[in-house]
Image (cartoon, rainbow, N blue to C red; front, side, top):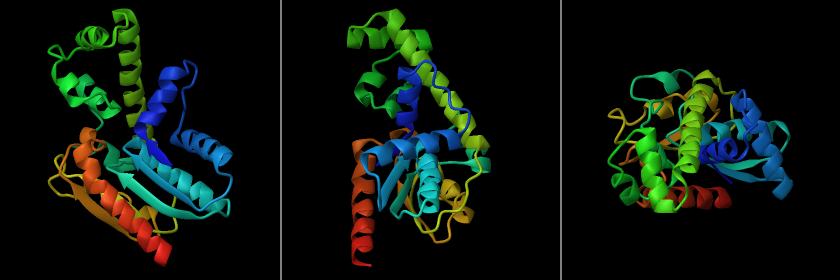
Amino acid sequence: MICRSTASRVRRILEDGYLPESLDELADRYVREIRQIRPSGPYRLLGWSLGGVIAHAMAVRIQAAGEGVELLAMMDSFAGATAVEEGSPTDVSVRELLGGFGIEATAVERISDPSLGGVAVALAEMSGHSVEHTEKVVGRLVSAADRNSRLMSEYRPACFDGDIVFFTAAADDATGGRAARGWENAVTGVVHNHAVPVTHWQMTSPDALAVVGPIVNQALREQSTS
């Protein structure tokens, strides 16, 4: 189960009336949805950005229900005080947001006007949709990103019984561990931090996943032999 921050944005885009008031509400909904597909564990959870915070909250809920969590992995996820520290990814340009949402970097780079209107015009030309429709979608993306930042800053995580496999966007963090340290009191085990040489908004790019994938696979192999 991959809980990307993109997933909550998709909810926001596709469901006009869906405005979660808290991260707990999102986590409850995600747990219900994955248990419709897989009623019992053990579960493997990985999330990027807000998705990692949701994955942690889900893991706590799953354990409280008596089920197992085999893997909890988080990709440059911030919560609580660390979500509003200088350098945290709470302020984002429209172009960065589009890159994080999965639009190819080459397409994003061709957008010369970084304003919402300029981005909407460029994307409308690329997609064939009307400027009005595209501007509405981009506006919702920006609104969802702002809301997600607030949810992260307000959230205070409970304690997960186990370890976290954590990935830091090292291009944004000279310390290499600011976000990871914010989770040390939210686990009974160890936060295993791994640096990925990209920015926060590039954490799902092929270059980043080439680093993340083998580490996650190794963690799963160790779980299967323990």
